[in-house]
Length: 196
Image (cartoon, rainbow, N blue to C red):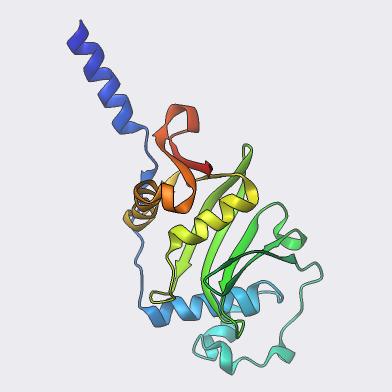
């Protein structure tokens, strides 16, 4: 009977993880274009994908006077600093309770993007984009978000890279000033962390 109980516990433990999804990472140039689009266009202007494609998905070629400004843009708030880069959160407006969090350099160029939404007493991570070589890691971004909101959860779906971020946070939790918990039923099978 004990053997059966251990098997059931181990089986349930393996099943209580975010669903693994495949997502092509793309080149650093693709990530840069995506960051520019979300930061410079999506926040302030209505989507016009045909026009965006017509300029080769190059934000520097966009004539913003051709775009329709959003009637209810989100509010920008600085929530932290990572090695001289600002961490800013956009919330409210057309995105409602969700938030878009960016790390931007001193020239206001986006380096990282994290989408989040309210979950329980904190936020749950959604989409993440990060330019390598920015001088910090996504773990630093998550730590900055946690220090602002208190508790951070993973999504219910996760790429290998997404899981790697959480594993790195667990490994460097003391340095980051976080408590990190593996997915379990208590957390709806999500990773969770909070500030120490």
